[in-house]
Image 1: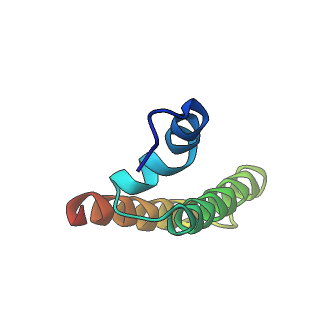
Image 2: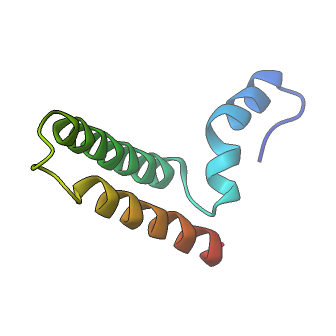
Amino acid sequence: MTDSSNPSSSVFATLFLDHPASVDESYFQHMRFAATFAFWLGTAALAALAHAVIPAVCETTTSRILRRLHARIEARHTAH
């Protein structure tokens, strides 16, 4: 869908459209997935930090989040 006579169109597609299209998503669908993934990674990091300081808290939180995220990534790869 890029216009080869317009180099800026090609750069735009490369930066914003090509990868989402490669996983059968629109730009905004991909943004939502990636932002949700980032949120849960941040949550897992905070749980790991809390656990590092106070070992009795968040004992399995990080591993549960990471397993769930891994399952989501695997499911995406098998679906596409």
